[in-house]
Length: 151
Image (tube, helix red, strand yellow):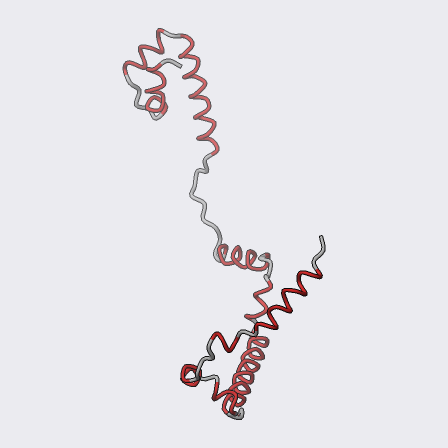
């Protein structure tokens, strides 16, 4: 396709031909045939266009949306949205919260819990490193390791 035809074909098919395109079509038989075929295709496409505007019947969109909702596959999470299950889940959660609250406030406050508080831990005296090390036990452990070693 030559440049005058490529640049002016759409305007020609719309009914507003360019003078340069008309002169080229008269002179070039190849482009003349291509423009003729394009005109035939444009006429065929125009014949497929409906003559009157088509409006869907009342309720068409609602019926389509209902059909889509019916075909939509339900997920595992949709179970949680059902009213009966959601009510049971809410009651069970409330009962668990109540039981945990009762357990928290009625548990005995014994000495072990009091000594694990941060201020008690910081106030305790830390034994020195010499008190923590038992040299005999360390020697025995090394000897046991050496005697039981095998490749």
